[in-house]
Image (cartoon, rainbow, N blue to C red; front, side, top):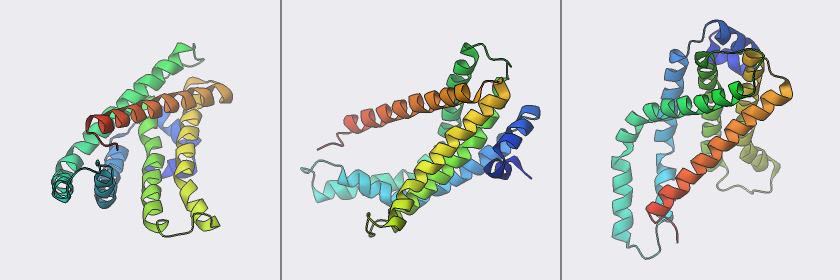
Length: 212
């Protein structure tokens, strides 16, 4: 079974296979295709969210120009999305690797092994992205108090949790840390990355005056 599918059912077995043969290109290309498809599918929601965040003083002509501009940028964004994604994966892996080797691990894994693990684990973030889009499409007109809608809204967080768990399992296997320490290292790296991304998003929003 390809590691792209194996990691969904047997993360530990996948990590051991990547430990012996840390191949990642094929999995990355599949994830990149999924990300591009997700970007195209969510374009309408992203455009409307951006337009709705514009100051109340802008005219309708300005709003229409913004929609047209964002739509015209879609192809360029899709082309550069895989490059931006692999750069982000590389930086995250570098930070995680530095954390793992900083505490004198029982086993010194190679960077390439951890990088292959990170790329495979990103599958869960991709599934979480599609789950978030499904939330926008299906829960928009639903009652947020209903059990079905509540379960739908929590689905993306479940995929994020699985992403961190898979990283922790990989750290445990590759570096020989205990489960507790592996979980702490994976959670710390994810938290730092999430805070940094939130800061960048806030900075971009502020620079574009996307606040009322």
